[in-house]
Image 1 (cartoon, rainbow, N blue to C red):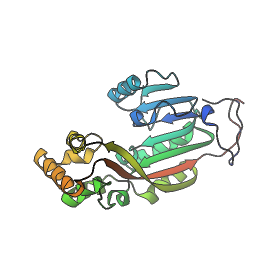
Image 2 (image 1 turned 90 degrees about the vertical axis):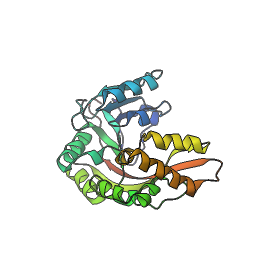
Image 3 (image 1 turned 60 degrees about the vertical axis):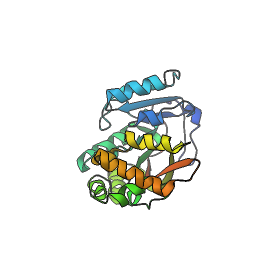
Image 4 (image 1 turned 60 degrees about the horizontal axis):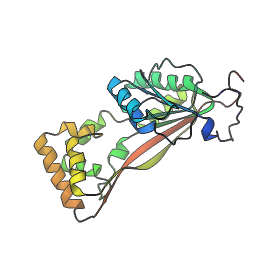
Length: 246
């Protein structure tokens, strides 16, 4: 948490002085080396919180708590950056409004929120030797119908952010390296685990094995595999000024 720092809309916040709030997927975001003065991870799952605490036990700048992203219970204006990853597709419209109001409340003047999730445009990106996820939908098109029911709409997200009081709202596309694999067996085991790929729980075990064979037919012959996923990043900010308590 920052105290006694004045910033303008055109100045960057020194990384070593920033306070981060991660309201989801704390195992991804609360890592050593972020350069922040503090990082607070919030997740609805106590299991995830405990796993994150264990992973980051050696870094005193990072703390975790179980909580609700729509009402974290954290102090107002306590964060310079609020980051949420793969969260908002879980929210119906009413809860999305509550979430962005909470984001606006948490951000200090000049603060920024980064909201990472997938739209249907992201989901429909063509399959390739680096974009394995695309094969899920070419092999089993019914999965697209399931995705359609839960993926956020870009315009709706931006409008909701603005209604919550966030400013300079925009969206960018990110191709994120999910993981690098040194062998096919490593990639196969990761797909079989379904970890981080909730849509695969819609397939039976035999369908999943069939999908893996399909992917193998398209990407076999490589020495290493670099898996990438397409995401949307929504960015918003709050009005700049003097931080409370200066």
